[in-house]
Length: 256
Ligand code: NI
Image (tube, rainbow, N blue to C red; front, side, top):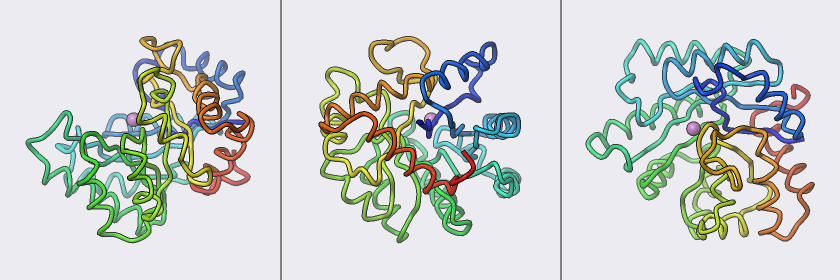
């Protein structure tokens, strides 16, 4: 079976038909979901879903687009939420210079707080990086051994080794199925199997041939299939190895 390590089932896009989305995902062998929060509202909703469904786990964090929520009250709330056994990681968090360039120092501070929290609690961190590869890497290098996921990895194949050295896993999503996505296809071809996980980032970044429509965890096998082709190994190997990687990383052995 598969686990979608980055599903925003807490997004309002699924308010009307979440049960159906889950059922179609299950029918496509996607039987576990990490629902990722990125601000106060989505953190809360991720936890609600994790309490409602045994196969959903949540993460909570402050996304670089939501750094205005970085204050003592919300920090304490997140620390409290992280005590919940169904909350298994921190993030998504990180740096985004595509959407925001006027608050880089604040973004870095919020990112550092989340790295330090993940290390203190020994839980994985989900890292968002957009147009900020070098700064992201330099901040991560200030810490040794960071456990977590480079979500929607957008770095080069050459930079992979740097992220592996820090201790991170690489998540590949629907973009790998896009015809002209040369860099991520090369990343997928050379990525280490023992550090690979799959994600949709739904409702965004829907894989081919559904590009443009709402994304769903049910499309995870399309991503696995493309990676299998690029690596010239079987899709069942991609499925089984990434599944084991997720169980180990999030300490979910026997729980999913
Ligand atoms: Ni996301």
